[in-house]
Image (cartoon, rainbow, N blue to C red; front, side, top):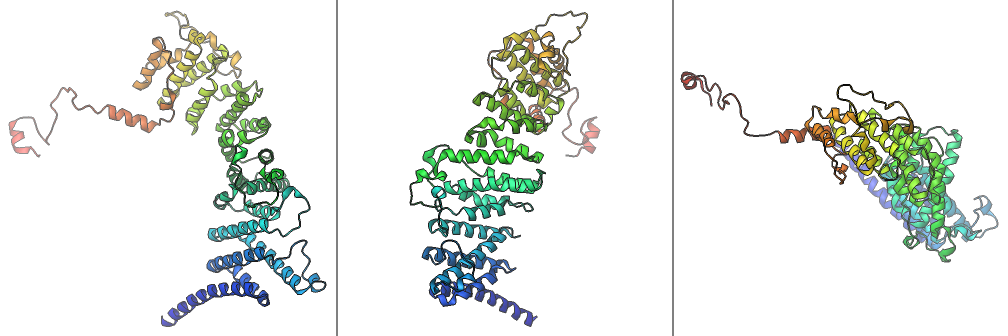
Length: 525
């Protein structure tokens, strides 16, 4: 075993020497230009299969090329080929051309490492690339032909975004690390622009087919973009421009909003995975619509999302509701679509609480026609006949609130009839149009039926309809999130009564009772 131990010790020493050597290589490169070829030693470690070697090389590259950028020791302008640099350039220019080519090679390797299998390598490469981006912003390597983009390194940011948006690897963790750079106004603006370029280029190649991994990466990056709401908030820039910021698009809130809007519309026009619809719709009304120049342009996406069905349809109606009430969108079929979402499965889906919360919001207006409110109340009452107790404790107060807001619907409670012969219910359950379902001609006899429900809380809630309803609406927030387990646990706690009258003597000891002899000889405490 001794020889093996010696080999292990020697390999550890080699690793330590490697790190020392890399630091020494950087020192030599920065002190004297005659050691320029030593940069290839760093690249050798950068391409190593060992994680420690790669991380050390990334650190060395970061220090080396950041210093060369500050010194302006990299060639500035259109870069000639290395063969062209042999003639027509002095030694100073040849050195700068040589190191500029090495810098470009370093960027390529770092971009490749954004797809490395180890997250530590990915993160290190990303931080190094963004450090170079900041350096290029302060010390541009290209002659700016037009002032619109000032000295921001657009090409480098585009390359970083292209690699973050991998088609094969889930980069959500790396993208979350990238979020700190998105807090900078100029980085955010050019990342948005880069996404706009990348998405159609990738999606058009697949003719719009669903690319789950890629689209999840795009959504992760886009959803991490926090837009400013006021111009005064735009103070954090990665690149400090010498020129006036007022003429720079990255410093204008209106240009940010336009680019943000085009980015989302460009992404949402393609077919998405079903799970992606939910993710987008959940953040739509808070994080997307408020920052769009024309929110009504989202109508096509919301209509397509509604056609998917299920919980996605409900979330899509939430977005439509925001457009109707806040942006004057004319959408006459909104309430008909909401009415058709009322089916037995709504009591069992994951989004049940959210559904009834939003439905309560949608039906809160006192200006809705009576026939429409009556249709919703009647349909919910019919569905209540087969609903679980937890759902009934939501549905019954929901119906009562509808009647409170619209007193004309009280006719559903006080419908005249004969006690001897029950009337046939004219309500048409299968009718999709609430205006044609004849709800106002019917009554809420279903609630009367629920007064004999096996669960006492449901029966008690159903009996409330026998007395005049109070003007104060019931608070639904207390029951929206209630689960079957919570309901059973509450009932068990309420039923724990210590003193219950019984027809027999309760036993406190084993074999107690039955006579003195049994008690004397067989009682076990």
